[in-house]
Length: 415
Figure 1 (cartoon, rainbow, N blue to C red):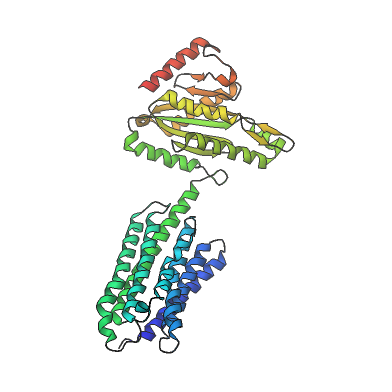
Figure 2: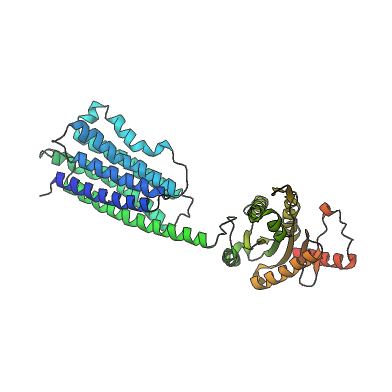
């Protein structure tokens, strides 16, 4: 025959063991505070279950009020762990379930009735499960199929508890049960909780793989994508249906005299210039296109577009605004400039290796033309874009060749 006290104590032992394992993980890597929050959650369940199991041996205040409050406070710790893991703000609403329970304990109609207490407890737990489901579905992480399944499982688990209790406990209470736990309630709760843990484990494994992949394609200094990220972004753009009729622009950036900056002001100052440049480009381009660090002081920008002239204005704007930024050096502040090489082709025909080769030729031409230049390779010739910040006129510098190249560029944009 099922012994309620034994079941509760076994459940307390299992959750306490899980809490200890998570605590060891946190001690091994103290920066991962989510392990500590999850450990506290399972420890709260363990302590609460142990107190509830002492019904008839300890005062009701400890077994009913304190025990169930501890068990429900686990939701707050689990929510804190989830929010911490996803780098979201932790706020006081995470402890709504135990606070609701405490509020109901001041009502004699609830406090003095086992059935009412059980239903209120499961109702408070349901609030906790619904809240976790909401956090899972509103994550910064992509809402994967596993996340959706986990959210559905949480909702089902939240509904099973009060439904089972409402149907079974009134009959068992007539038999003199001293604990709000019967075999059907315990078995259904244990089974669904194990299912939840299995789905949650799969979700965390997928999220961890996603984070590791993100780290592998991200430059650690600037936070932008690296060369591997460029390859993946290019493949995604080629596959995207909405881009098949568009052009694809590739711009290569190279910060001018970067070695001199490092030699004169130090590598830390050079790193600051790189970060400044990335922040500026990200502010200008926003979510349009893909900006990556190719290595050293060289960067690339992929932009699907239908208007080449507008795309050129955006790219050249980064050069103009970067030249206005000031960086604090060892002895004085200084400004930096960047040279840009651009090549554009229809997405359907675009080959990344060829685009890199043509854009690199344009970049070399920008360096040869005196740096702080934007040069476009149209497949036939390189043309330096006239710039107001240098007081240039479109007819300066080999006017016939320049105008002819600009005409070809305009024709490319209209195709």
